[in-house]
Image (cartoon, rainbow over all chains, first blue to last red; front, side, top):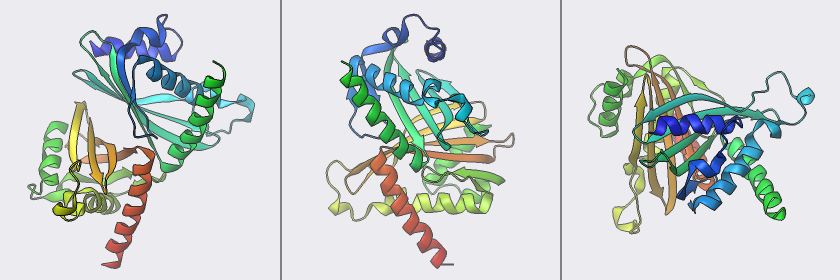
Length: 145
Length: 145
């Protein structure tokens, strides 16, 4: 069941999944941030974090292509391990010349809805950068309400 | 092949694998720290980092059992996903009342030797704590030479 969900997740990341996050996330999903200890409970707050992460980490956030250096890496998944109801997707990217490497640990229920979404990031400077960028993005998103 | 290696790894973590790290790690293994960007290349430096991590994160580092609070979590693996030549092992522990959650991403060659060992940690305060503790441990270990 999770294979289909992960396929939908990748389609969503490419902007090709019509139901979007709303169709992927369980009402009682819990989001675990790479920065904050406290679990974020419920579909609404999970979607807010994932949307903020998408806006922060996605290629739209990479700025002017002409200003990117030759070592620029767009957000991309580099390793994927799936077993049972858990998928672990490793990713990498650069932002402003800084390398970020991370993992999405995604757990589904028997209907293929995502019930847990956990993110870890390395190295330390990337966690600090993400902390700053995500804070600004969440503030911007809540100002827009 | 990697299933056997991961079984040996768990035995090693319990102190029950006679060949130890020396029998698990490939000569050209690369270690990726949760803190530092630069890949650490070679068996010797990988073993140094893994030994320092064991001494820092292992239960021997937990201090006097009588001083632990009731929420103390000893180092333990909580999720394991294995496919192909990659294993992803999620762990957790507490140290001084602080929660640490992390993942070992282990890659093997066809002979079952570990050729890549990557660690990520969350949340941010745990990465900062580990940074401090690992720095002190590596210094202590190199003083002992």
